[in-house]
Image 1 (cartoon, rainbow, N blue to C red):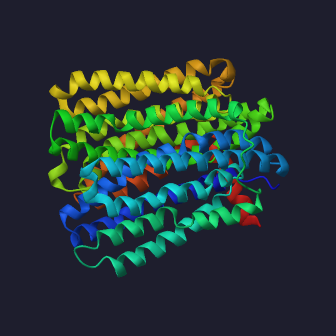
Image 2: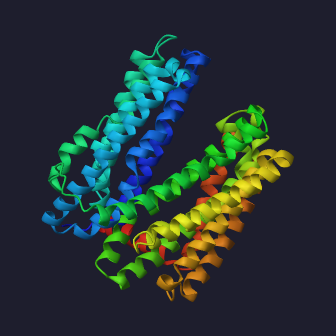
Image 3: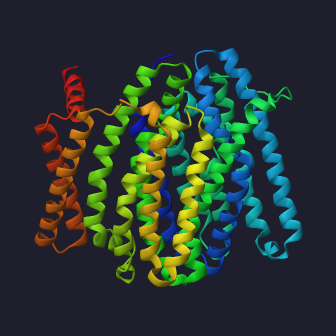
Length: 484
């Protein structure tokens, strides 16, 4: 099988992340003007409610399937056997999820007002299972995934302007959202036959599969609670205004984090493949390369977001939300900590079958987050939530490194740490560029445009001047393409 380009995969996955961000940015301002506040409330509640059942149906199967399935990428017969077992477990968990959902709808009268929208959103549960996107991740088929995503996003936007035109069309909006998210998954299921043959089977090695799946599931649940804990506690202990302010900060933080993480996501199956086939030298080399690349991206990005926080908040929302600048800036260190925590958890501990350590780390971080938020939120509101998020991500990163120490020993040479110093110095220069932008321009868009363009050029020149491996390889590749 032809080896996929990690650089191309990172670009394609980044493009898909951008599309997932742009879609709601385009649609929500339009929809919020057409539909009533109550209808938007029903839509958001129903969608968030169904996410818990998608979580139950998914168990920890996608992560487990990528880790274990990557080992069989070159053996179709073994992959057929493995994929059929995993898919059958996923079908059973989906049935259980629907059973719990229908019991909730039957016994909780308050849900009856949302019945139609909940049922529409529930289509996502079965379609997510049938989508078997983990197969495409195993084979690093990001071109197919990205093209499919673009096509369905475009169709969904057109459908939105046709079918959501009057107050009362919120069910149409819900259906279009489902179509955008999982409409292509039937095509996924049919197209997957190119890579392996999946069938339902009752010959499942339960003892082999269920323990790691359930540990990963428990870690996913803990992570979900951990990520939504600060907003939940702000809502319970403060008020809607504070939640609204903090939501602006976390929205920007998550957008930036997911864009950087797109580079990391595409490497996970490669790490699983290399570790599974005991190609340790290649595994360690890739780990060093990815760590260096993500340090190169995350450190200046965190500094840039910190410096541009007032302009970002104005662009994303309005003057009414300027209080969010402080919490956004306090979340910036978490951009670096969370990315490196993710490297060691997803690219080292999970491939090495240490998911129990990942669960332990997640639980400890979640408890730290919970205790400190309960103590500090009443006094410092969203400021406390932001500080505690950065602290929790730091603690998580340190524990991930500790539990990976035997695997990563000797991976990070003096050259890596010299590069970190260069990235910090380059990021300091980014801060000076942003100060200059504020002095030269008054327009928010002009400041952002100047700061981003000038910072990228300045940072790139520093990397070229220090002969950074990543930038020199990129230049060599571009030069080779132009010569061709």
